[in-house]
Length: 314
Picture 1 (tube, helix red, strand yellow):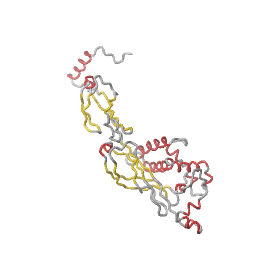
Picture 2 (cartoon, rainbow, N blue to C red):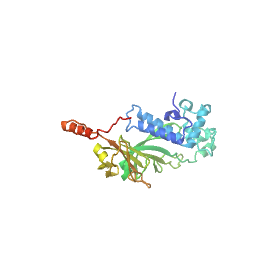
Picture 3 (tube, rainbow, N blue to C red):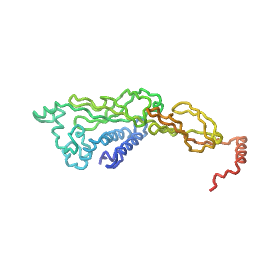
């Protein structure tokens, strides 16, 4: 049995918009075809794109919930009962909430007389409808946040054909990413969303920016967290060091007796947004190996100098 959209994203039906978004972003990072090693990454990415396109839109989500609660009302429409999806609902524009899903003749009339109908239907099909806005996310290098970039990207965009069936369209676009984009901010591309119906304007495409994380660097909004390695004497003596950061090569004065895991805040050295973020350097004290006799003697002298230090004292 096919999963419904909530199951596809791994969320409950009462999940908040933020929970739905977080679940999508987590899955997108796992299954994005450019980085995923999963065998079914492309098919899985298509499925979660379609699910998110529905559940992230309040009006689409409301209609989808109606369909889940009243599946019998869709038994004569294509394969909706089997797949848990009724694509035609996304072309229907109701005047308010609580739609009753009864106007299927109006739906079919939009796509031409091939679906049957008389003069009224022919008149209806002359109406034009704006295409749906669509959403996608891309991962880019953190350096782009500091300098900006124009990149050519290929996206898999979930869309619907005239029969209301989901399909995936590949688009290659040139996107200008301005300096200072925070994690999660969106770029709007006018007219790059779903095509309009009967000459209607195209929808817009919203691209959410995500920055690639490493085992050393992560991003939260406009703030950047970076782990740096320091030697025991640099940490103990509070020496000045040079650090290669996304903001460039910086000189940093360590506090005396710095501790492992301690954070140093470099004000406004995070993403240079309108309200600049901060750069947090997380200290990781690294012990040098003692291979030679001279190095082992140095450790022995170190131990004698700190004979009163008891690391396992309770």
